[in-house]
Every structure is written in C-alpha cells, then in structure tokens.
Image (tube, rainbow, N blue to C red; front, side, top):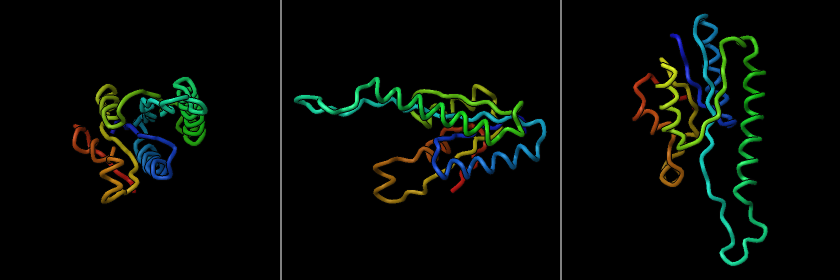
Amino acid sequence: MKTIVWAVDGSECSWRAGEWAVEILEKWSEAELVAVYVHVPTVPAADAWTGIGMPTVMDVEAQESAIEQELREQVLEKLQPFAGRVTFRGEYGASADVIVDVAEAVGADLIVMGTHGRKGLDRVLMGSVSTAVLHRARQAVLVVR
C-alpha cells in the first residue's frame, strides 16, 4: 500500500472514513495519504426580479474557500503524527469525477470515503458520490458508513 486518497468534506461520515485511513497509515509506514476536498461549482439562486438578499457567486466562492481552509487545517492538525506523509488538495468539479481523477493522478492504491447511507427518494434526489466512485474507480474503494 503506497498511496491512499481520502475524500473529506467535513461531514461526520468523512471523518469516520479518515479514522480508517489513519489506521492504514499506522500499519503501512511507507503509505502516503492525499486528502481531497472537492468544491462543487454552484450557481447561487437569485430572485428573478430583484436579486436582493441573495448570495453572489463571489460570496459562494469565498465561503467554499473558507471551508477548504478550515478543513485543511483540521486534517493537517489531526494527522500531525504523519506530517511528512499527508497532503491536502482542494479541487473543483463533480465530486465523484474529481476523486477518481485525483486517485489516478497520484497512482493511488485505495480510495477511502464516507457515505451518508441515503436510501430511496433521498438517494435519487441527492445522488450518491460513493456509488459513482465505486463504479468509476480502478482502485479499491473503502466506503465507511
């Protein structure tokens, strides 16, 4: 095991997945971890008539950058014992595509990610990043619930 990609979004399930990634780092002293946060491009909704009180694209981008910076600090702090073996990447795009692309680019052996465990209509409406990664990735994928 040489390289692990960990999809992190700040949710409880992604932190649980991070715990599994840490266990792997503890067992494989040569392994490296790439934590990936994906900014999903969004167009803020606006009042069709006035737009008053609605966030601008710049507001949304600033919030995303703040979230990324906070996650970067949390990840690097929590994984301090593995400091030379952990990197953090902020990327833009469709989450599943970006996770798989990063895994390919870094030559990952494993992708570790959390799942919210949505079912039924919630899954249809919200989609499932973990399912999409499972279908697209060439690497082994560990999905933690």
